[in-house]
Amino acid sequence: MTENAISIKNLVKTYSNGKQALRGVSLDIPRGSMFALLGPNGAGKSTLINTLAGLVNKTSGQVTVWGFDIDRDPRNAKASIGIVPQELVFDAFFTPLEVLELQAGLYGVPKAQRRSMELLRAVKLDDKANAYSRTLSGGMKRRLLVAKALVHNPPILVLDEPTAGVDLELRQQLWSYVRELHAAGATVVLTTHYLEEAQQLCDRIAIIHNGQVVANTDKETLLEQATEKVVVISVEARLDAVPSCLDGYNATLRGPHRIAIRYDKRTASAGRILAALGGQGLGIVDVSTEEADLEDIFLALTYRTDTVDA
Ligand SMILES: Nc1ncnc2c1ncn2[C@@H]1O[C@H](COP(=O)(O)OP(=O)(O)OP(=O)(O)O)[C@@H](O)[C@H]1O
Image (cartoon, rainbow, N blue to C red; front, top):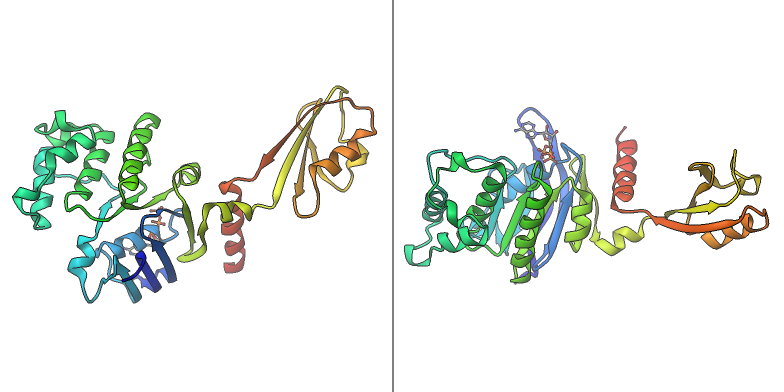
């Protein structure tokens, strides 16, 4: 039995118009992980997720979901995954309770094992159980889609850009529920444009760009790849220009009393920069450093492959 929730080998998808959306993607998503799939628009994230869901037919490659090959055992593969799609699509004339009951029916969940009301309570929609879906706000619809993805009790939950256009409070509610599911054992895969969200929520991160995986590692390792740091030094003296002792550094003024110096932490240190400034009689009053974050790494990686592709 495989340890991976999802295992993808050399996945290629070429659409009928010739567009190669996935160009040999290999990716293992460990069971029990909280996994982020990041990538700019058009990178291939939805194509990847829709392949897992059985909505897109792959061109070649091998995919297993919870150990079930999607070609040889599509029924079990589908039963192992719940997908929250990007678009808010509902039949407006069904109530949330009916939406969940219908979905349970589609998945063949016996009546005695259905838990529609429990799910509505979990996503805080129990008071809307019998309202028409068209009367729900965007955020409520999003929550209903999460409940819908969970009716067949799948061990894997995939959320495709779930918080795009969702306000901050709701986003936090949604994430706290997703965290609960994860703590209860679910494997969670999410695609997001909010890098900060991936950084806060996920333990593993893959970056996909132009249909290829350009990074796939645990969050800490990815963050360690950031080699650039910034030290910001505030001084008493009024500065008109960067002091000449910083020649050779990438230094800029951030106002008349602050200097920001970018440096590569492998070859320089804040201490050395301070030492260079120390003898100048500028009166150092404050020093702070800024670490690169996921966004910097993301930009560096996607920029690099842009350049390679060009
Ligand atoms: N049905 C289709 N026919 C042809 N090309 C498609 C089709 N669906 C997607 N594409 C193209 O495949 C590429 C990958 O698209 P995909 O939707 O998977 O990217 P994405 O990373 O999910 O982007 P977004 O964040 O914008 O949803 C894009 O260039 C897109 O235009």
